[in-house]
Length: 127
Image 1 (cartoon, rainbow, N blue to C red):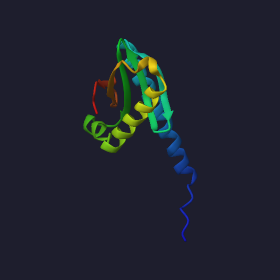
Image 2: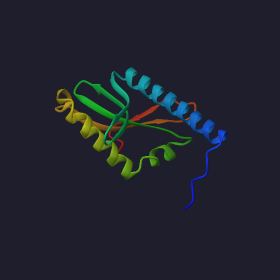
Image 3: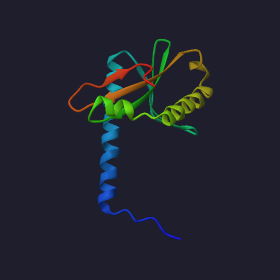
């Protein structure tokens, strides 16, 4: 039986830097949604089915938003796998099941792409 290698301080520092970077990207994405008239209902929402980066509402449209920060738009769009999209949809179903107020809203599964030195790009129904 083999044990997994122990993570050193460099690995932990890299992990923390990525976590900070991801949180900052999600903050920028939330600000971009606010400027478009959305109200943020939740960030980093955890359900039994998985996590949703941002849940936002504008009028009768409820958006479940996945935030991707990459160097290129192509890399950001490709970062959402079919498996991940299915997990987010399951998490959204779970979230909605516990909030009847939003069940009649139009649902969108949106992407928010963050590229270096660019304003976040919102793609409605991006996955």
